[in-house]
Length: 593
Image (cartoon, rainbow, N blue to C red; front, side, top):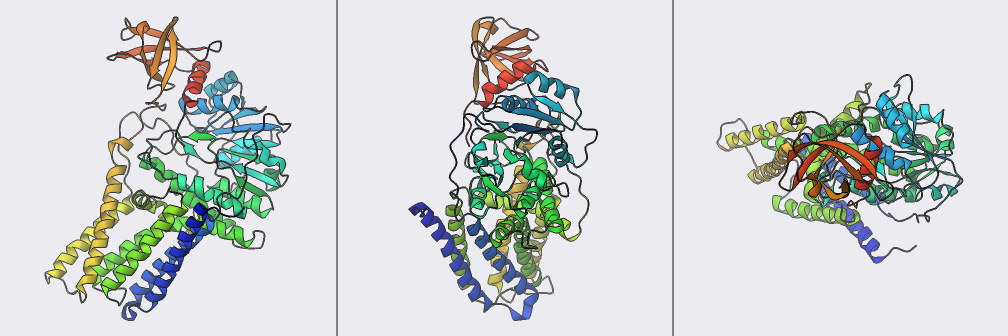
């Protein structure tokens, strides 16, 4: 299919940015400071790495519509099992996923795979119509849990959902038709999130992972390089078994397993439609833990099953994996630019020999072209300020990746906490690497002022270069300080609430035949309004009916406080059917993608 005008503009912006960057780097070869190669060569290599990164990005998103989605199906003869691995999630997190999985269109079985060995999970699963499976040990964490199930469940296809990822009813109906291709092993769908006040969200316009899931992953379809992301996916059981099951040698079992599937000749596809929503990290501690695990796992894959060795992957697939794995080096490039500026201030040495004005014009022109290309190629999902902010947040993960690549060590799988993480509003641990960079930058400023006052043994032969370095340093330190302030804000402190409260939602209900409304509802409580609660007092027992006529379920609870127009009710624990109906009411309401 020939590209339309929008696609043509996107690709053209990327090509122009590449050409301008290449021309700039050719000019820069003549500006190297040969008397300070220890600084000028690393600085040049940093800029060259930017060119490579842009080229890999352009390659990744060259064609994001290479796959035509099949029509949804209303029935299938395939046997399907929906697998929900769980370890320590609270009922308010796990129940919505189980209830929605049981209610999916198309005939299937739902299996709750409990590595937490919890009696209440078994009771909940069976009451909601799911099967329950546990194992004698927790070897290999999530990967081992899935492999144990694969040995005991007879199904042609398995859908995998993380414990917090709530699927839409059409999840299976919109994905199983891809498996008419007998060579297809995997259908991956985007990860999206229903807690839009998470650490990854910046207002309503930016979500850190949306660029990857809505643009980069669809672009990998062209190269048969879309990979499994651990959840919201459907896999062919025979394909998994042909590669020995889910990979257990790395922390990123999903990426590692997809690599083995590609090496074995299987096809994968990314279906670019949100069909499930989960919980994004709510604070920096959760975000950092998750990103460090991904970074360490990616480097484990690189060391133990290097995708660039051998001929089982074609060159296009190798380039696609290069784009994925190299992303974990971006944080080092961000830090290195800052260290160059600090070095200029501490030594008085410039990494280039060129008029500062000329360099500034060329650099700004190239930077603007690169940012414009990123904005157009990302289909509007790249935004410069939030992007730079999260570049700094990912620095500790990049350091973990480097550590794991150069000094490999056993790393234990740590589940990203979901839901309630404490009873007090505690602030997160700030990344020490960023704090150290801020302190080092302040030291460089003080040294600059002292040098300008003649109080140090060095002098600035080119004061303009030193001032430019100072301004660059100031801008980046401002970003780091803002990043640290945001991460340490009370908004992103310890999560004390077990269930997500849907502040914009309203659920119709009734109490003793009287119509009422549930405001800011969750699975643990709601603000109840209406005549039925006018006389309720603190401590009163209340039973609420929720759900459509003929399918009503009951939720009992206690009045905890009165509000101006109603009462706040805390629901009793383990009301599985009532909680499932409330979950259906909440998650079937529209949520932005």
